[in-house]
Length: 284
Image 1: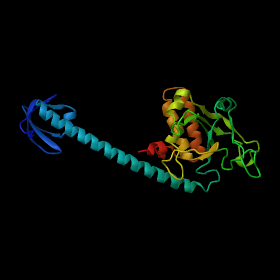
Image 2: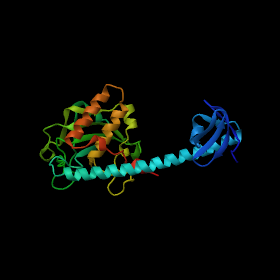
Image 3: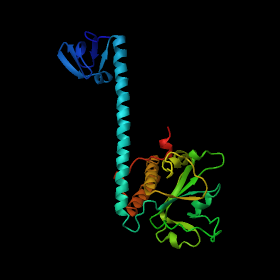
Image 4: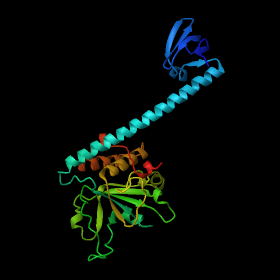
């Protein structure tokens, strides 16, 4: 359909007629003179066709342009995330020369049903026991864990899918903790930097939004075991999302302080933190 000579209305210039148009510009004649506008963008703001069919045509053009914009935005977001991740990995390689700057110095734990009350009351978590070998039955020592490490507590009950595993809370290890010398298998928390999520918050904080398996990034499988080492960047992403989840509340300040301390001791630049890209994010 040719839009030339079709009537339009403008909120300031009144009624006009289309003179010419192409894929980017439309020229309209008003009583006050000829005016040029970006086409079709202007029709989503302050210009409208009088003709119904002409309106349908421009609406389709606007929808197509919006769809294209979303695609370009998604591509740009993915490129930005890849670049952020690349910069982070490079920075961690440089910082690895520092004895405390390890890229996977955090631990995530699968707490047993009912165990969370004890964890968040006493603010400590048991590392588990060796199931075989010479040290069978003895507490595990987590050599990568140190005073700069955080413990992430998760839950998946028997009636839950693995992909629905929830984050219950987190805490920093106390300032004297050294995983290589931990004889009793307990990691006790820092007295200040610790968070317990409410039931409503846990339902929104899914573990697999952040975690990816080494062998297959989109594979959602925990397998066996109580504990896994956890990437520093994932922990920072979780703390950042908890801050956003608690926006406007008093608890938000505690989460913000936790993140700032965590990033400080693990030499992470908050401004270069990439978006979360866990296994759930990578499902088709």
